[in-house]
Length: 213
Image 1 (cartoon, rainbow, N blue to C red):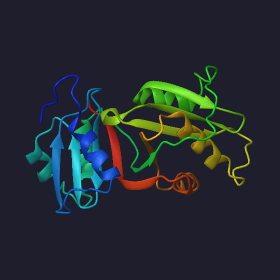
Image 2 (image 1 turned 120 degrees about the vertical axis):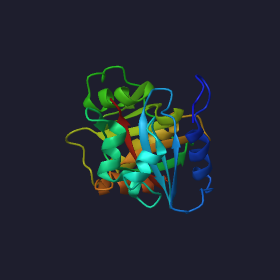
Image 3 (image 1 turned 180 degrees about the vertical axis):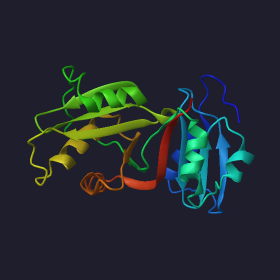
Image 4 (image 1 turned 180 degrees about the horizontal axis):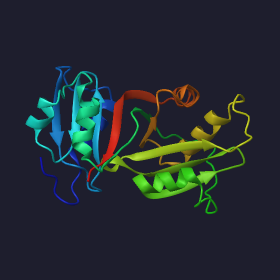
């Protein structure tokens, strides 16, 4: 499926529907969509149905074992989508929340060299950075144009005193109230996952980002 320049990627509507609790049928199938406007390839898995953003042929993916029950993230499928020299990201839980008023964090212009900021700008457009003495938040447009939030606490911050939740809530307060805000968290990062869930984020699926070469 081709996507015209400047048009909304089909995945955007699928994710918005999932955020509202409307999911595709759990039929074990997968759909192939074009890479997004930034050229990002990806595998997005919802319950029993998956989406592969790629320019590879569906028949080739099917032959490698792709399906809607986890087969699209099989290593052989991911490597085929990426190509021999492509980059394959981690498998992350996809979470979403609605921005709401609160105590917003101040914007920061002194953290451009921070690894979290550099990573955000490698995968997102229009990244802005906010933070305080506990940690920082980045907000930018990522896969299919969605507004994505990432968080990191500074070294030495007490991670058992609710600092992670406070920084996440401060990031949500920066966005326009009512807007959907997305986050991706490694399932093994239990502390981060618990913090996002405590702030009202809900899981809708999983994904792997890919740079194909």
